[in-house]
Length: 361
Image (cartoon, rainbow, N blue to C red; front, top):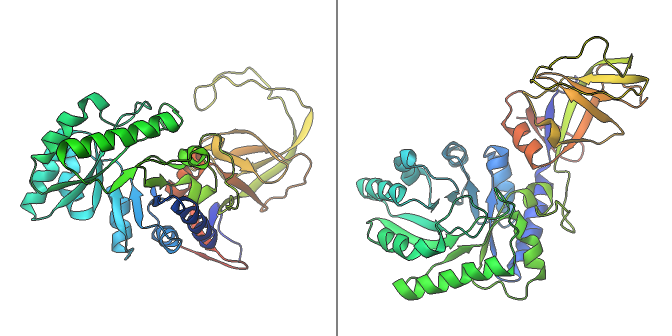
């Protein structure tokens, strides 16, 4: 029986290995890890693989993903990376720890925590240059003071986010500032902040070069565990697996055609006016995969193929005389954007693989 396509094949053993090696690496300086599950839609089996590798926290941006993992019996401390005031009641019920930067959201969390007789743990996010979420350092004291007045909330830590919106690299300067802000606030308010989360997979270069991690004792890792790389330059972290996820799609047409379209060129299906180079007669393959399924720029063919373009449901390849036949499978490596799209797409089957066989889920 032919395997279903398109599909993404997932090696849980490689994800577990990556989590274990990263826990050992960062653990050398007392840094724990949150395994970030948002790119895999909160897939319980992948969260379990991270936990088996030594991760103690599972972090996600969406309540639905955390609820999915809880319902599947995943046992971990669950951290919500993105809070919304409108979801405060559900956050209190479903999440152990939430990351926050707005006092109104904290007021609502406090209200529902009191209502349900819960004590909700919060981490305060500080803005250190990337210009995504976080409180400006000059406003931290006032923010912490207001938070401490709210019942049924406990401030257990602080964190920052870098190398996302602004692409600001974690370095000794901003990591030292995070530590200094933690020390200052602990002294000012007699706090004991347990978790100081210094960032994400972009922190690898800083960690490898620094002689002193300061107060940073936690990182939130998704891409490093899943794809084996850091995110400043997307270089492979030594010893990690980089092909835990492989995408397969089916060839549905394979023909020799001129490389230049014929006729007057106008806008394509997505409003762009394409430009083509005449490469002569080429063997072209069309695969059953398109922009509705995947982020095309997040794919890298494993064979000597070139992606020429895509529409909503077709992708056109220059097969470079590999003589692809209808029904053949073409497989791709994925970057983080490609992985995120593939795992979210309802049209791509998720399949767990071992050495010699696979089981569809």
